Length: 190
Image (tube, rainbow, N blue to C red):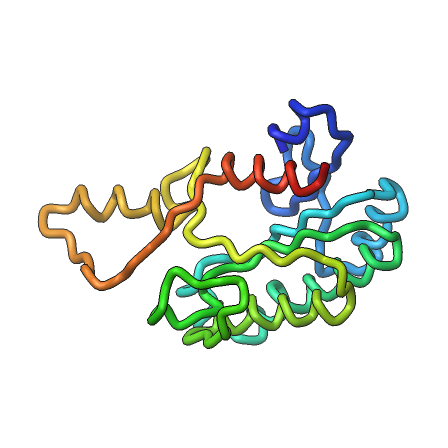
């Protein structure tokens, strides 16, 4: 939000479990609350970045994964379309199997876990209900945090401090700074 605020945008950030300060509390599963936010604020642009982004937490609960990462995306997409708001939907490189990274925009998705499947379902839902929306597949986000466990990148610090850390050497990752991403999204919005 900071990047947009610094550039003079009027904005409203929504949150649920972390609502504080300027963030407005909104349960995205509650269609009435979500619709109220659109009606009340009348956004020109919507950036939908709410998701459960921890693959290990979703693997055991595919129904929840679809609810949070696809059904909510569909609801946000429908409301954005109805209110003539341009939508940016944040997705992930987990929609791919990792065998041919880095991927091009037209790379063929092939998710290998519930998280990737649910985010791909979110992409498809958004594309169906709001064909003019932008879908950004962003890998491995990192940036300002409240606690180390918030991102898979910063969570590594705890692991590497262990006496005998167990790490793989086969993953090829492309970390993306959240502040850089915000600058790119703000440029898209101009």
